[in-house]
Image (cartoon, rainbow, N blue to C red):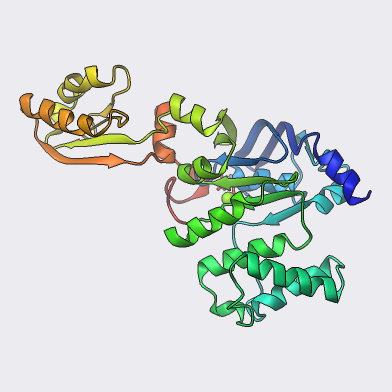
Length: 338
Ligand SMILES: Nc1ncnc2c1ncn2[C@@H]1O[C@H](COP(=O)(O)OP(=O)(O)O)[C@@H](O)[C@H]1O
Ligand SMILES: [Mg+2]
């Protein structure tokens, strides 16, 4: 099939997943996943460690077989037409796959040759990508001297050598410092055009919010909510909040009551931790009003802050609990750098 035909075919649906399940021993890693990803869009699968993100990416990129269900990528079945799927996708795994002993340029050129681009085209494509990913100055430096952010950019550049139509990025910015993360976000955002679909996984609400047109939240192998960033903000605590920590948690209910009329039905409180929070969409006047009400109720605050929402907040709103990891996945919770 020539590239134009593939491009045409890819326009139908970029990714279509129906009833995909996968079990590893006692762990039900995926439990009946249904999803459709439209072409020319960035799609984010948002969930904590151990929720099944990598397993789904591995199934969609033909590296792993599901126990049941079907999936098409670029219109091709991931099992029956695995070879075709591989010809239209690019994958940047959770851990960058760069060869430390090679320079940035060599890493890219070798991948070009693996794709049979030929020496001349590989070199040209490598130069183009080094430029695009701000790696020109480091092109002749061996990758072992690269920072985390540079390695991620090189890895991402390598997946783009053959101009894939559908790009899978498994936690592309986990472990990066904020500056490198911002730089990578710009590059990722620029990929979703001309039928270049991006399917990314992340633990960061902010990342999904900034990049994705559509977000699906995964918890213990199930999709628990889907929508645009705006929809998720409205329904599920995805907005910034004013958060109060009380000096004495005995006062939690009294504090929630005193604040209730500021955001009826939208106050979250936990008497276990002595925290109360409310949406911060009332402008700067809201903060002083909160303080005034605590003052007149005689409630002493240990901390008062404006909190950007996290995955935990969204989980709390949807499920009533924070994003805990399934026991098999080992360590802690959303937001943790792994
Ligand atoms: N090859 C495997 N063998 C056994 N268990 C696995 C394997 N891969 C993943 N799991 C388990 O499946 C669940 C989902 O894992 P994973 O897809 O890696 O989650 P995420 O990428 O969201 O962190 C976890 O409980 C994990 O321990
Ligand atoms: Mg993973």
